[in-house]
Length: 348
Image 1: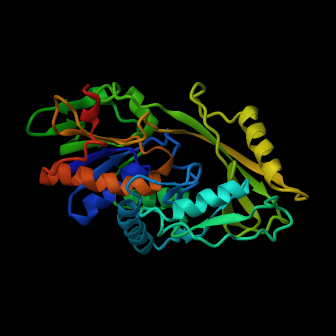
Image 2: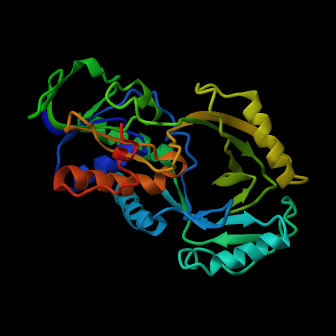
Image 3: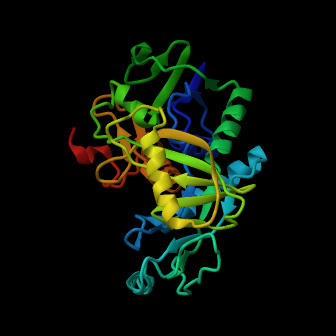
């Protein structure tokens, strides 16, 4: 088999790059063994505001301008509902926070996204005496459904290899790459935290963080917006809500923990009152985060046909398509990467 690209990993990063290849008529084959779960357990929110500090997400407008059309294209092609437009409410803890919100709404990068209308709380199941601020142009991508649908499409096209990529079997020359019976021009590693096992890129300063989410059933909660208040509450329909998420840097297994569950429920119980609920699911994943909170994008220092697309962190649905387009233009058009995402910034 001869292709333009081999892609290793089919989470948000891998899908985003595959979409660039499709749009430009490039052939490819994908390897994925299902071992990385950061994308499949992602909340999938796209939100252009850092709600802890009322600041703008890096390149938020540029990211959304690329990401939302990409997901719309996948929706149409696969005939799936993926993009759920839903407002995000930030609970105010005090009058001072309300004032900080109003001050932030005057900043040029935030005026478009921060509503200046304070929303009063009328939900008896939520404790919010100071009300909420609403973030505009937000939503949720159903990442799990997208990945399942995308993999099904790749399988139908006989271009998904559901097996572990064997690095030792990769034969590298300046002209081409060989892997078993496949010949390719380039390979892109989009493995998430699995990059720690990749001998070509395992020196990159990935700082993986374990995250756990709960799904609860709460018939009396009745909210149709995402609520940020210590935890995120994300409505899924049918009285189901995601509660998340935790951060853990030492335990990097995919096992769920009692500690994480207790932490999330403690925060949840400070938010909702007189509202019985039942935990129906708990999941864990490893986020591919980087200390400077910027992705890892670029080429191998020695082998110029080996590339990496990683480190999307907690905002993968926004930043993935943005940096995937940069990487494609870098490979095919020799367009320089932004220095803040280029792995050369670490001088490895």
